[in-house]
Image (tube, rainbow, N blue to C red; front, side, top):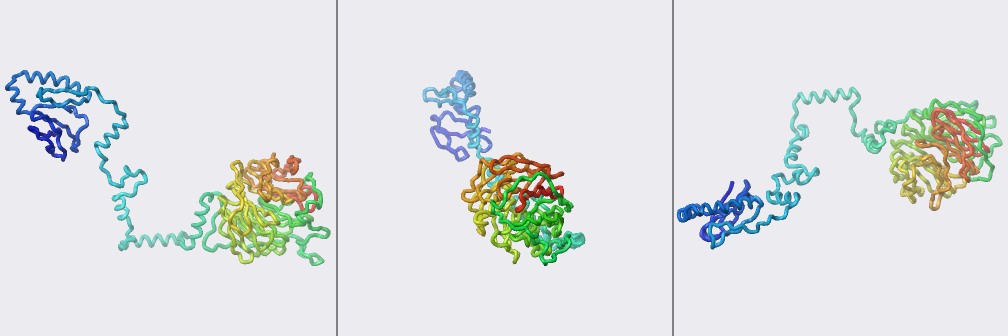
Length: 565
């Protein structure tokens, strides 16, 4: 409604009832009618803004004196005022000469204002909406909890925590549920599951790719067993079955001039015995008269490459074996399995010398070249750990990769540094026993390289890149990419196919995802030969015999190990 402030006879500054002073008017005849909204604020453009009406008593007196002339004059002046009022013009106050006359000044309309300006002016005029100080209107979606929410949260404390005695019926129901869970084997001990919860936290991003986690605080591996398949473990001269046969001399793997090598021409033998695929094969150091295989059936087997038969089976895992590795003299070997255990075996007797686990899946294992009591393991939690075989304790951790570690290769000065690769598409170079990398090899064009093999000259690293190429890096110094040395033609995307290099360094071989076996010339990077090696899966492993000139072994997920010559 309209609220009129009154002033008479030249008095200015009277209060209008809202704490505001009225506008000073002309001496004594008229008053200004001001429209106000429900909150007491002036309306910006009221319809009768600027209309000056005479006082009632003075208007009555004028009508008596002047008759109807003054009324007609007001009608004549108010009619244009209504039209001008539609344009929101501001009239002038009446002058002393023409009392009761309406004089309109500044009849030009103001400049149009934008919508944003009008909204801003309206917000300033009407003031903020009535809300709590911590409402979402002021703070957005990150508003702190309001007083109402805090009150509800305070009232939501369970009765058992607030100290209130529960009803006997509720207590009886809880005891029944606890007994039922205990009988079902669902009652868990929080202390026993702390490590399991931590495992779940570490492996949350790739848990769907990994085998089940170890249960309990101190899990145990399966009972190991071994079977000897040869005729006798000791010959007539008292030598063990793992000793090299007469006339076979060992060759230094770094001696490239011992003998010349050639590309094999055909498959001469098939080793069968694994009930599932074979993932890795390793030859006995220096002599190569024994072949160690890691099977996806959870067993490891040692074969005689001279007699071409199975010698001993080692069963110690209840999941597939991911990697195996001989020590420097071949008397021991390590097996890493998807059951999250590592086992150190005695090659001759088949006894387990040690069982190790850090509750992670070991992907690759490697003995330290200068001490067979130390070995390093690349794990599924992005770390590389060093174990002491005698104590079973972890002595060092290398934690800079962002994905599971795939390969470990020792380089420079017979193994004082190691090169590691991971699914994060980075290659890191480490000093032994120092947990900070000394070199990052990372490029936006790089792909993951799950296999890295050292060239016999120890000058190059040959890497299996998952963009279907073999790439070569300098081993040592700057570790630069040799851009001219690329071996192409095979398809390995998604598979960690092993790389074999001839002892004289002239030839490189690799399997691929289609089961083929490829051979390249290392110097010219030209493909020399390819064979259809394995059926029903990839050819994932291949090794070159250290003594024989043209003998290569390959394995695949069809469970067959083939000898090529």
